[in-house]
Image 1 (tube, rainbow, N blue to C red):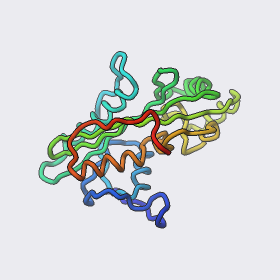
Image 2 (spheres, rainbow, N blue to C red):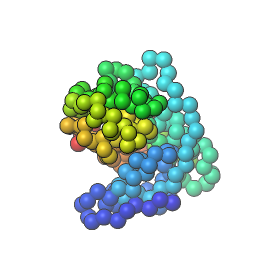
Image 3 (cartoon, one colour):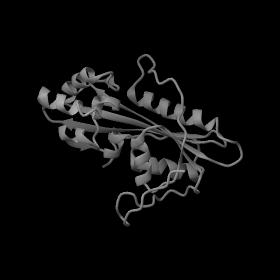
Length: 227
């Protein structure tokens, strides 16, 4: 069980207003960023790592891709949980989109440099799918959330120096907003936690709906999530 960090009232990490009993939330992800965000939300959870094919379908839109993968991850974990106790499984997937092209994680340092050379001095989208599955009855709630990231111009030498730190190699788009990659970002329109890997407000709302027994279905998301 992962417990939330303590923090003063009103600060990040305060207890989330999500009526989930302790021991009922499962995170279907190996991402340390998502673990940190849930901890900052004040939630306690277990971690189960899903094993699914994350290949995009032909002509699949980014929003459809991340929603499908978030649901797939949560459902894959839910199917293997012990029967009896009601549990909610949270799945998520994030992609970077530039000019309608989905940009994944770099294969090596040269690929990371090439990605950042494309992203700098441009505006790109970060799209995250979030899904909550009721492991007891298989009900699914899901949503895609979009933020826009504006990057400043950067010289190749600066990009090389950042990539050499190793931070970019396991990140979609080859940068970490919560780390040294913030140096390239001039503005985020929408949720910053969405760019990092999990939109706090939308995740909190989906969990609250799931706990309240809301009917399964997708939630329509605006083009950009509120800050």
